[in-house]
Image (cartoon, rainbow, N blue to C red; front, side):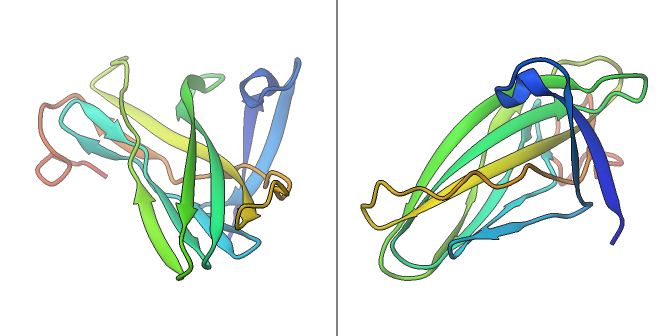
Length: 158
């Protein structure tokens, strides 16, 4: 699988100045301390975009996820659309969940291309001992059309 390089302004990652190069496979998931997090390809739902995140954890885990949402710009720097943080706790059994993060995407043309980056950390039980943050993983890029319809009926939605 070929790696993609993404330049993200370091300020968007909570750092100071410059850009950071991120490398990862086109479809990426990372496992840390028994939890796997996968940034899924965004999907269109009417006028909103769902930046979904799949999370699968062994029992008795809490995962904290950072999400950055971007509009892919072919002519320069990608535009940061927003950022969110999620915390999901899992009971004694192994379990999985898909988190849904719905957002409006500003219309710049008849279509936009969007993606997300996620990073996470894990703790076991009620411990205060969190793992280090994982590297940022990029979802596939989705083309979002200016259309008041769901992704099931959107012409050319991908």
